[in-house]
Every structure is written in structure tokens, then in C-alpha cells.
Length: 402
Image (cartoon, rainbow, N blue to C red):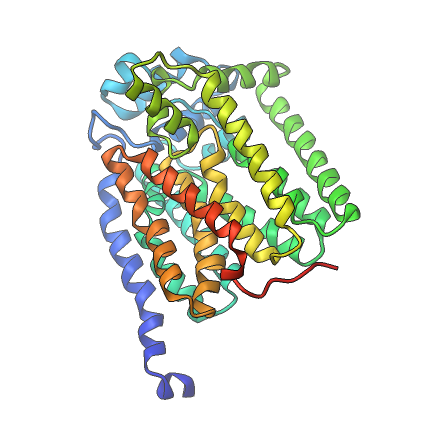
């Protein structure tokens, strides 16, 4: 109380997130009911309700069946959106994710929507607090996140990205506290959305020695095997044989995926092919992405001894969505991590211009994706990532690990 009297600005900072999040919750109701949304462009939440309803009705063996998903989506939405005439908004996550969503009162889409919003909100604020370490900073970053496009897309689409963000932060926190086994177990739960498992090889680079590396990797593999077993028990003995081909085959417009609208290098390559008037090739973009992943791993490995774990984790999370094969707007929520760990450091070191530039890139630039400029967003963030990696002195406090 004495602090607030002496520093009245503290009170304003404490009020900011309350105001910002109140505005968010005031605007969200228009997206809460899949039956009243724009019939031409239904919310992604429809695909999670689809998976949940299929599980609820005991037809989980048909979870990845095209016609089953389309039939259920038409029934749930009560309309026939353009997307559902020629395709579906494909449910692409594992059976465990569908099972978790089935715990919602799926017959009431509005209530289900708000439960997911609440869970995501709690997870996001918790992740912010764990990374920032103080109430004041938590208030500042909790306000800043409401300006992220990915934040809005996460809440509107009912994606589990708030939970995934928290899982990533908990894994990093465990590794930082010299508990690699716990970190490995926690990381394994990114299997809820398999594309996020790209984090794993980069997390190897944050381990301090072979003992930590083997502990992290071993417990991660055990967790993955356990989750594969759980998913097999839920789905049936052909889970792996069904799911992997489905993930590959569903990367097209018939399944609601517009690759050129992803915020990653795959989308950049597709856009270039479109500009050149050449036929879309799947393997060329995949080859480029794999090559850049290897290059990024080697670049971070080379620098690993001169940056702190916090800066390493921040840089990894800056790059991660761009190097993936499937990156929706909501997936950029992980850029909240470099906002806290990298921009926060730049501010602390009084590198104001760099801090402002990176903050603008992370918060404002992604909104240009709504104008089909995902390729621009990807290239700018990618370039800035490697610029930071090549100039670690800007972050200061470099040190050599023991």
C-alpha cells in the first residue's frame, strides 16, 4: 500500500490489464456461437466441437474420416458454409485432444466457448507470471498480449494454444531449475498439438551437459510413448497408421488448410511459386524448411555458450513458428515469450530503439496477415531473428556456461 502511495503509476499499471481484458471479453460474445457466425467463414472452434461430438457419440474410430467430419460440422453449425460444401474444417489433433474437448458441454457451444476462453486466459496469465517474475511486469505483459493477433485468434478459434504456451514455459522453467527429467515429461504433452513438438530438438541445445541431455530426451521419449499408448487405447489399434497419413493428406484446401495463409517458410515458398506461375510443389517447400531447421539448429548450437538460457529460449520461440510446416495465426502466441525475454532485456539494457522495433514486429506486424501478407511477416521476423542471433551483444549479460 505504501508503494502505491509513493508511486501512483503502479496503480495505473495494475488497472491496465483489467481494462484491456474487459474490452476483450466485451467483444468476444459475437464469436461465441457457431450457429450465428458468418456462414461463409465459420470459426475454427467448429472443428474442436466436431472432434468432441464424434467422441461423445462413440464414433471415435471415424474421427479422421472426411465424410464423418463434414456431416457433423453441418449438423453442429446448422448451416452449410461454403467451406463445408467442398470440404471441412479438419480436426487434425490427436484423439486425446478430442477427448479433452468432449469434457465440455458440447451441446451448448456458447458455454463451451467461454470455458475454453477462461482456461486459455488463466494459462496465458500464468505463463506470463512465470516468465516475468513480478506482478507489475505481469500486468504490463498481460495488457500487451491483448494487442496480439494470435491472442484474438486463440480465443476466437477455441484453440488450446494458451495451454500449449504454458506447457512450453513450464518445460523451460524446469530445465532452468536443473530438472531436465521433469522438463522432458512436460514437453511431451505438446503432443496435444504435434506441430509444437518441433521445439524438442531446440530444447536439447538448452541442456548444460550430456547428463541433462539424456535425462531430458529419455523422459520426453517415455512420455511420448505413453501418450501414443493412451491415444491408441482411445482410438483403436490403427491409431498411428491412420493418424500420420491423415496429417499429411489433410494439408490442402479441401480440409480447410490454405498453405499460403500460414505464417511460415512453407507459405513463403508457395507464394513465390504462385508469383512465378509455376506448379505448386510440396517437396520443394518441405526441403527448404528442413534445411533451414538444420541451419538454425547449427547456428544456435554454435552460439549456445555465449547466451543465457533465457535469451536462447526467447530466440528459439521467435524462430519456431516460422520453421514449422503448419503455422496458423493463433500459433504465433508463442511470440509472447520473446516479447518478455528478449524485448524485456533490451529495455533493461536501455536499447530503446531495438526494443521498440522488436515489439512492433511482434505485436503490430502480424496484423498484416489479414491482408494476405503472411510472407512479409515471416521474412521480417526471420531476418530479425538471425540478426539478433548474430549480434548477441545487444542483449548483454553474455556468459560462458560451466
